[in-house]
Amino acid sequence: MEASDAWNKRWEASTLPMARTFMEVATRKKSLVCLAADKYTMAELFELLEAVGPSIAALKTHVDLIDDWNMEEWGRFCARAQAMDLLIFEDRKFADIGKISRKQMGGIYNIKEWSDLVTAHLISGPDIVDGLQAAWAEASREGGVLLLAQMSSRGNLLNPEYTSTVVEAGRVHPGVFGFIGNGSNADSVRELRSKVGEGKMIWTPGVNLATGDGEMGQRYGDPYEAVMAGSDCIIVGSGIHGSDDPAAAAAAYAEASWKGLMER
Ligand code: S5P
Image (tube, rainbow, N blue to C red; front, side, top):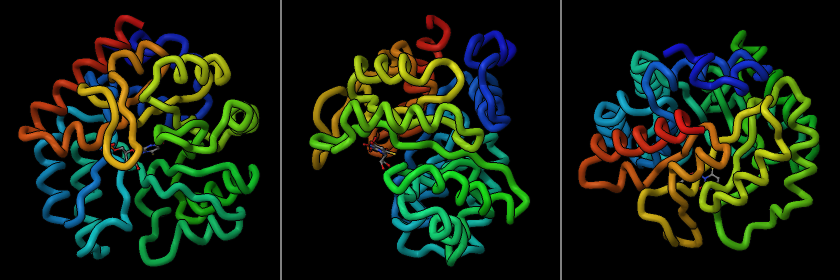
């Protein structure tokens, strides 16, 4: 199947090349799954990637979780992810002013050199997106920013008015790839999609085949429901890496998400 057929309006309306790249990868792999690779050693990360790589479309990292992180091994890890046809997404949740966020793309982790996507809060204003884009430009690379428009955790402060403000600013910004939405609640995703329109991605964490409450205030909704409600990618962590059989779990999430896209 061609990505343009699978994604229809989203394909037509998408403004950022990286969004089309994602839609192509997802179509090749029949998976709208982004793995939240929340592991604490390089060995565990490599093992998880080998097990689930074929069933996922993107790899989300928290580079500052890893106890034995070093650039050499990280470079090998990213190369392996690219060889497995994955986008690399550092979930750094930048929030500072534009010039500092730009510099935070460098430093010891040098995120600008290997990330295709990063997350940011818009709390400091729209210049954060320009700062992050300037960092990728310095590295002669392209990337996309996912703005946190909603969150999955209980008691979060991102109320509907805040969500609308983030979407209004982000939907017209060429450096914005899309928005993070609350996958634990299909109605929230639907509401977010109505605000966003067709032109940007919505990616949703807070998704698990076992719905309900997770650890420390996390909440979970169903992956298929999230896609039907307008999510373009389900971000799944413990549902995959916490499973006894991560490869089988990843395949199950891929199937649920692809079924959602086909029916949507
Ligand atoms: O609102 C959010 C935004 C994000 S990016 N809620 C989230 O849970 N996340 C991330 O998604 C979080 O940082 C974690 O890496 C992942 C969810 O993991 P899980 O184990 O609960 O599926």
